[in-house]
Picture 1 (spheres, rainbow, N blue to C red):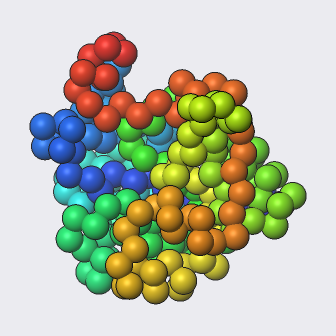
Picture 2 (tube, rainbow, N blue to C red; picture 1 turned 180 degrees about the horizontal axis):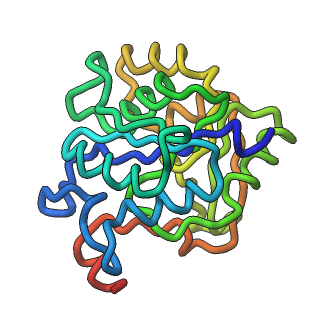
Length: 207
């Protein structure tokens, strides 16, 4: 397993309800679009990059073009027609799995700008050791505040057919879907690396 066999994929298809309807990935954070931070973190760790977005596609293409070139760009994709309609991040994950050429997919939300520099390498190592199809980072492991970051994970493309089947049958919760697969979690000590900047108040507090 190596980074060239992993496509990094930004999930930016949400409605921004906690951002007063703004497109969260394009909201400014430290003078740059929030999504740019996550994209650059992925670019340093993955062979290709793609984005799931349901509006402002040209703005996301511009972000992607500034970080990648044609040979490493997976493009910007709205949710596929059969999974459209405010169905949450699982729809974006399905779209990403369908449009990814590599064996592995690393999905992250667009509001997580401080991702660890060794995130993909560590998750890949865990996948190899545990024979897992999905590996999810976990923070504050073993404490009452333990948290699995379900929408930030390394996913093998082979899970796509079953994921679509579950979606068609009504599954929308990413955590439920992950736990139905052959999965593992990996503890990370720095919880701040997985902080979600998902409200305007949080963003203002971090400037």
